Image: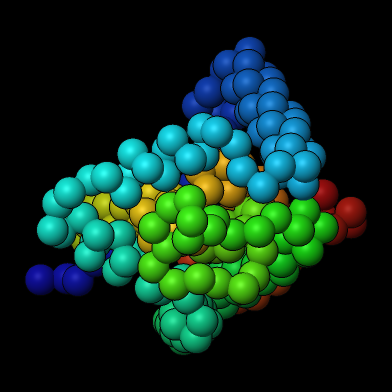
Length: 252
């Protein structure tokens, strides 16, 4: 029996061949509007977080999350956060990027590393600008008091941008299959649960988490644009998922 390659290697059908132009314009408008709203919401949170150490709703949310009295809940929340702590986060990113590169997804590996670097680097810069302290032990339960700043959550930023980009790669490169579905579930749970985890362990306020999801989403969109822009320019002869280079002016 002939083995099948789970990676899509052919060019996909052009969007304008399957979606009417008015629909594409409408979708593009909705997407652009959502980017504007996300950027504005994050900007407002940056200003507010620089003025207030926490909001009343932050305290309410943390108390609600930490009041969950299930033996497995705190354990799950801790394990969800562990991959985002140093040095595990660097090891995890390094292993995933190396794996993608070795199997032949060279450009995908580069952009995945870029997603982690952009979200991490800009996140640290924003933390220094906002200068917001971590939740205090007198207000909430804190598993381990950290000395770094609180806004935005670095864990949530990295998970949203890095794991989100891996989700994008799985959606665009892998054929529908059970392993693909499992991959989506794992990545989706990591991104979805990390926000609750950071609140439960007492490292962040809910507003830190929301801000990180917003900014992480913007970083993810930027990385997808970079990926699509460079797909026809770099590593075009890579072993897996190659792409034909864009024609030059003389070839057009």
